[in-house]
Image 1 (cartoon, rainbow, N blue to C red):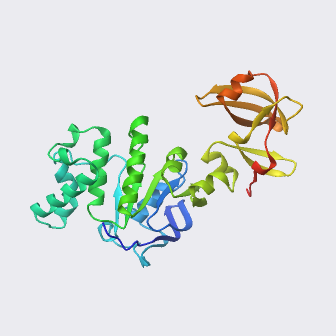
Image 2: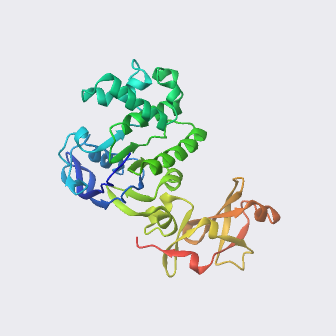
Image 3: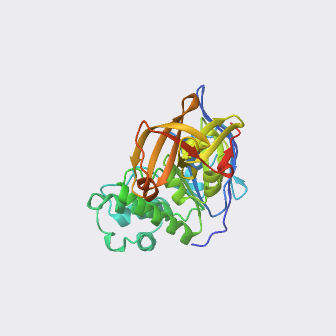
Length: 328
C-alpha cells in the first residue's frame, strides 16, 4: 500500500454528553506512520476520542485534522480512517472473503474485483486458505485477523483499533501483538490503538498517550513515558514504579532500581509486607514511614541468596540518579 503519510492531529477536541465532559480540550499531533496507543483506565475518555476520530461520535468542540484537512464533520467512510471494533462485528452469514469485501460491495464495486482485493488482504493476514469459511468456523485469533483485513481493505490513512486484543487468551494476545506490530511496519500507515493494559502499550507503541479524567496526562515515545513519568498518576498507571514523598519532594523510582540492604544501610527503612515470586524476579513490598509502600523487584538469584520474609525490617536503597522528580 502506498501512502502519502497523512498526519493526524487533534486540536482542542472536546466531547460532552449533556453535562458530563468525556473528553476535555485535548490536543495531540500523532507521529506520521507511527503506532500510537491511547492508554488509560476505564472512563478516562480514550474510547470516546477514538470514536470521534472514526466519526462514530460527534465532536462537541475542536477539530480533527488528517493531512491538514478538518475531517470532524465528514461521514466515517469519507475520512480516510477505518475502525476495528473490540467484538470484531463480523457478519455470521457471510463467508470470510465476503466479510472482508463488504465495504467495497457498499461502494458498488463488482464482485470479481472486490473478491480479488479481499484475497490480497487475506494473504496479508495469512488467511488465504480460509476465505470460504464462515466466521463461526474460525478461532478467536483468526476472526480478529478477518476483522483487520476488512478494516484495511478500504486503504485507510489511519487504522483505529478499540481494545482489539481484550477478547483473546493471554498466549494469543502476545502473539497477536507481534502480528499487529509487523503489519503496521509493513503497511507504513498510522495505527491508533486504545488499551488499558500498560504491557500491551509498551510492547506495541512508538508513542504512548496516557489519558486520565478526560485529558492527556502525558504523551511521548513509549520509553520516555516509562522512564520519565511526569505525574504520580502516570508513574503508577504505567506500572513498575514507586511514588514516594521524601523530604526533597515527590519522586518516582523504578521498582527494579530498588535494592534490599541491611536495615541500617538503606536510603530508607521498611517492614516487609509481602513477598511474591514472579519467575525471573521476586517482588518485595515494604511499608515505610507515613504509611507509604515501596516495591522492589529483585532478580531471583540475588533474592534467594539472602531471602527475606514478611515482618522483616530491611533497608531499601537506590541510586539518587534513579529518583525521578514528579510535577504533580
